[in-house]
Amino acid sequence: MKPSIAIIGAGLAGLTLARELRAHAEITLFEKARGLGGRMSTRRRDQHRWDHGAQFFTARSRAFKALLKPFIETGAVVEWQPNITTLSPDQAPYKRPWFEPHYVAAPGMNGLLKAMSPGLNITLQTRVETLEQQNGQWRLFDDQGKCLGEFDWVISSAPLPQTEALLPLAADTWAGFDMQPCYALMLKVDDQDLPVWDAAQVNDSPLRWIAFNHRLPGRNRNLGAVVAHSTADWAGAHLEDDQEQVKHTLTAEFCALTGVSPQAVQEAQLHRWRYALATEVENDPVGYVLDAERKLAACGDWCLGGRVEAAFSSGHRLAARLRQLL
Ligand SMILES: Cc1cc2nc3c(=O)[nH]c(=O)nc-3n(C[C@H](O)[C@H](O)[C@H](O)COP(=O)(O)OP(=O)(O)OC[C@H]3O[C@@H](n4cnc5c(N)ncnc54)[C@H](O)[C@@H]3O)c2cc1C
Image (cartoon, rainbow, N blue to C red; front, side, top):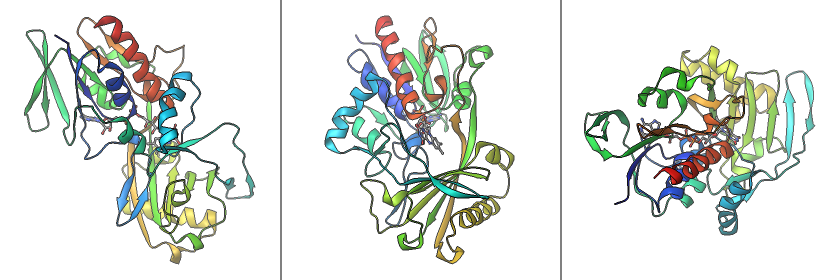
């Protein structure tokens, strides 16, 4: 009989792991959100859409390029060639070229995860809260205390602090990893009220990135949707501030930087990512956490330094190791 594995979290790392192990194990994924995406989510309001987490990704390893190839062929992943600029409060904007292909998923960033998910056993809207070991099996419980089943292995692909709270592993397991917060501001602004550039890297400001999301490939250009991200330092300093005030401050900063009239902003929403971006990991990391004896493991971007490709690589590397063990 194949071993059973519970994977907590259906972001890119969890889905990669599930796809690469499904021939070797009975896999169940548990995801607390209503839909797939994790930090590659797309928020919808009316007909507008905002990719309020990851903005684009690069593909450097052969394995990640191989994953993307069929999705590029079907149009679920598209190269993005924006007119990109650099902004700062005291300097004239200057154009900033990219030297390698940058990709987005379509019609929203979660499109890649949706395309990867067919055939996988995913239970949505289920937050795994605790685990306990009984007779060599792991029993999982949700936040209502309901038992979610018994499994041989439990693997968390949740962000670092959530994984740390879930898995009963030694405290020093987590040394060397860290994650930082970020605010995502989402605005409705008609396209004709926006500058001609498509995205901007921002310096010397509470904001670090602005993108006119509706101009990405596969989106509707008529539904003007702006995404602006704060710096990690600014988010950290204002994490518990009144959220209306944070929204107001960041919207005013957006208008000041871009010259967009405050009257042109029809609606503003804010998302607080408490665990947004993983910091670089030093010393040639293995790319996952594994306790083979207790049959517990973890993967995710934070194991390799916090980017979309890092999430893939972490799931991919852990799958290769587990195929040797199962
Ligand atoms: C604002 C922002 C901007 C970014 N920009 C870029 C960018 O431009 N380029 C780039 O390459 N990367 C970017 N990133 C990083 C990129 O989004 C991540 O590296 C990648 O999406 C991480 O994937 P993951 O599978 O490791 O984690 P996640 O996507 O976080 O997946 C983990 C999943 O676990 C679920 N979960 C957590 N706890 C539980 C629980 N107890 N029970 C059940 N489910 C649970 C979560 O809901 C989530 O879906 C950005 C991230 C953010 C937040």
